[in-house]
Image (cartoon, rainbow, N blue to C red):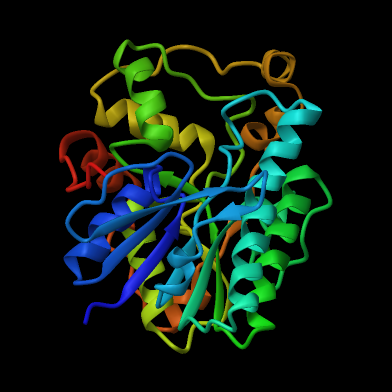
Length: 311
């Protein structure tokens, strides 16, 4: 009988790729979603409502593994007080809802794997490299990531192996930063942001999905793991590589930090600051990234459609 992987946030950018990869490997997939969808070959849909703490419990009870990706996109809207609450609650309250069902039924899954972000570390000055042991930041995103991970750790209290994937900027064809920036750069209108010196740790979506699958299959994975390529990519080197891959000039001056802060408010911090992040911990377990070079990853995103489920 096929092992079942329950994914929250399974209809999003990363969730679609992950679903496709899990199906290829012979798993069945369940997806928690706010809107009813017809089941397809290998994929079952269940309803939940985080705000009212309602869920079709069969989704949890049928699962062998749970991958928790759910969370409002932090860069979609300006950070009003209401938006901040939505960003936080979509991550923490959703995990607590899953926990309540697991505890209620004394249900054991083989692993609970939660998304997190390198925003956990905040902005680092100088050339210091963040490891999984680096202290968390005290800013909004740093605090959200801490609470997010603490909600995942509730599962550990139930005796469930728990893994937290601290993800950098995700590159892929069907979503993320490449989809947003490529049309602008194709028109020759791309430019660096602020100083352009801020670090931008990244990962190809294919490698990220492989890491999630490694997390459910490798019983030696516990705790937090960084999911980035540590190649010292800065905002300026990233935009130069993207322009080069598209065969377009990069001629416009950097967009001044002041303009970005006026336009984005507090959210400007996530694009104007950065940090270097180590991926040594996952490598020590034998994991090997298939996309280690930025240009190779960008060319793959721009020119080679990946097999993505239409779920």
